[in-house]
Length: 386
Picture 1 (cartoon, rainbow, N blue to C red):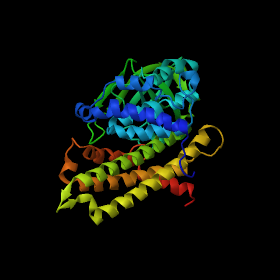
Picture 2 (picture 1 turned 135 degrees about the horizontal axis):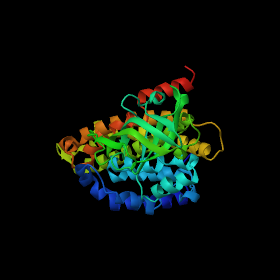
Picture 3 (picture 1 turned 90 degrees about the horizontal axis):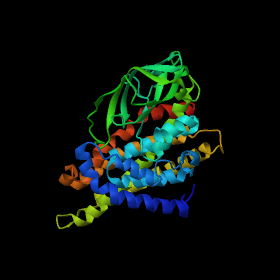
Picture 4 (picture 1 turned 30 degrees about the horizontal axis):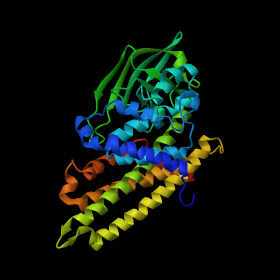
């Protein structure tokens, strides 16, 4: 992919997202972090703007657009200066619901997908457990057949939107141990026996609730199964690709924003009779980072083009290698950029009312969530044949 991968329509859409983010989200960034949550109205507003179903089918209320629009949406979200809001919205739009669009029955789409696209219901993805994160094949939450129902028992952990989700796209064990016994179901949270254990207190992403969920003899209809029984593992792995690519995209957009803020601050702040941005040590450091960010963006755009081809059925080969590389590279680089920009800001960079302080703590999960950097390296090494 050479040059600008976006069409005029992509750029018009980008402007719409940026206007919303800068006008309605960014002014509340610190307020929502301090509150530890943001208003549910944000989901509804995103739904009104068509941002929660960008690539979902029009039959379910989505826009049916190509992945370039998702790229523009993710990049502009970074301007909210609130990683918790960004994470929650991306889980709703690109993590918990695409699999329902792909596999769900008409009933499931009507009950769960359509109101999620409108922002009327909040969605969560329930994969990770207290003893199973990246090792999805080891999940223990069970779904036992009982007539026309499944009876679900177990626990999920690290669940974004978990404290207020109206439904969970849930991974359960319906068969034997290992990846061959895993299924996916749509789980409404008003079922008896379901409970939120607690909201986890995190270092960053403060405006986004992350929860432990418990399931005790929870009954749901077997018709809420997504796809075929015991065939959920491959769909989970497919879903991971969108989550990982989204993390890489927002990492690069966030780094660009940090560099913009640093350059502006470097012109305004003086030390020893000159702007601090004029010192060679910082000019060269930021040039190195700008070069790395541009490389990361191009890697992401290449992976996004391949992902779009795969989603559209133009190729049978999922771009797992390219997406894993994009997440590995961008997530690791974000740690270095945030560190250096905070150092450049000095004492002001350590004050939480400044965006850079919050960005420094909020980039940390990029190398952990959706598969750690170590897991990305393992995936890449296996695909590369060594």
